[in-house]
Image (cartoon, rainbow, N blue to C red):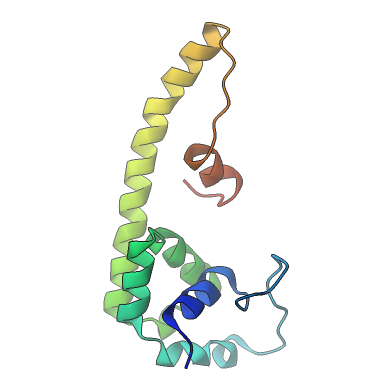
Length: 128
């Protein structure tokens, strides 16, 4: 039996736990066959683990991009969807507040770089 953490890792990364490279596994399987493993997922455990680690928005994005909605319980999908849009709302608010601060620093000739959240959201995740 796959642990909840292993399942969450697989859902988020499309990789097997312990894989060394960041490339998704190539597969010759059709999506319907490849996603059959999602039928036995303990969604309560996955949702709890994702929530504890603030991964619900990312999990929703990955599931949506992978076309696996049919394999996710409707209530689980809704919970992830709500977390995704709440995160987007909060992040957009923070970006609105960050912009004038960065402008003021730049206009005052104070060098600044954006690290972590604001930078990672766009550069790494491609999604605020």
